[in-house]
Length: 178
Image: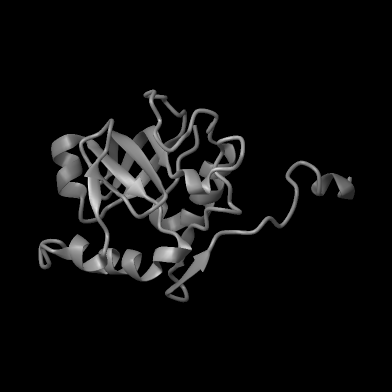
C-alpha cells in the first residue's frame, strides 16, 4: 500500500493519489462510506493535538485559486490567532465521516483516520472518504487535473507551483523507446 509524506513529497502524493486512487464513486456528495485503499503519512502540524484526541483528521488540498489563503493558514497558528480561518476567508463544516473540519472553499478534501504514529511527527492514516466538488470532476465523475489545479510547495525556492497540464501518456510514451 503506498505511503506518502506530505511535507517531503507533496507533489508525488498528489500525482499518485489522483492518478492511482479509485474514484469511481467519488461525487460532490458521496452518499456511501467508501473505503479507498490508499494510506498516507501526514507530518506534524497545528492539528496534531486534535488528532491525538479524535484519531481523525481531514486534508484539504490547496489549489491555484486560493494560494494566499492556503499560505496564511499554513503560517499562522490558531493558538495565536483564534480568528485565523475567518481572516483567511475560509469557512468550515464538520466532515461527514470523521470528527474534523472541511474547508468549504477548497475543492478536494480527504477524510482520514489515524492508524498509528510512526515517529513523533509522522502519522500513518487511512483515507476513509473523499469529498470532491463537482466543478473538478470530469464527465465520468473522476477528478480531472484539467479542472482541479492543486498546488505544491517547493521548500528549496519557497514557492508554490501548480500541478497541472498533461505532459504525456502513461504506459505508452515510454514504449516508443523499447
